[in-house]
Image 1: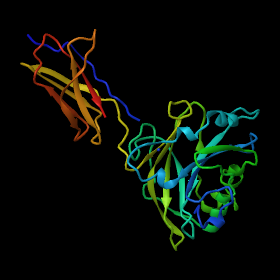
Image 2 (image 1 turned 60 degrees about the vertical axis):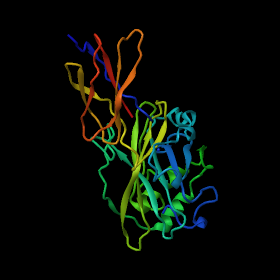
Image 3 (image 1 turned 90 degrees about the vertical axis):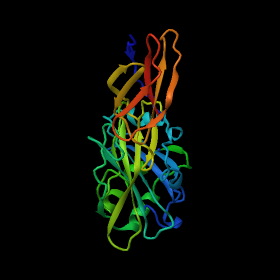
Length: 312
């Protein structure tokens, strides 16, 4: 009698106005670039860590995750942590489109708890149709222009602490937070992952401005990829399939897994032995149409087979 003695399920995980005319910006700030800033909140520490992530159009609007890890220096980030004062590190992204006047804005918002857009474990986008009072565009653009901005793809430790002074954390006139009512920052540390949504508001002649969701940044100082941006159009991250059903009828083995995503395909593989292992594909990849996928092997004629499902 044919039987399935063991089934192994595995998933292969594949792994991102402020604005105004150029003259509004300081000489060191480049319009159309996005800037990520970290600061040791409340006057602690001796510098801010500021990164120029490069042109906005090279980060947002695509369909694949953008790996920005080469822009991120763990040593510079830790320089903010290694202070005599209790660290309270905040970080966020601002940027914009220098072609618009009044300015257009990009700003990040902290995500936490529940499912997001797209779904990411431990994060949630709660402001999909955010409309906010964004005011004093020229002043906000001037705030960004005060950043000690490095060249695209590089970072700097800014001893003048221009991020803390002009962007966050003080809610007062003369800071980006105070002039827009938008706080781009969230708390980060060397041992936790932070998700930050990127929002954009187009130029408008009215004070009330609608924000559109562009994707999210993942900051993971302890991960193999420290900084990424996932655009809105990128497929949702893979989650590991879990077997929920397995059966054998004659020479047909049926395997069903859940945690599937309809933006990914699933491939059944088999091997007659685990020592040595020799995986071979069974049939063609199946694109999920829902949260479960059923795969079959109509040629299960050996004495035993081991199965796994890969996803991509």
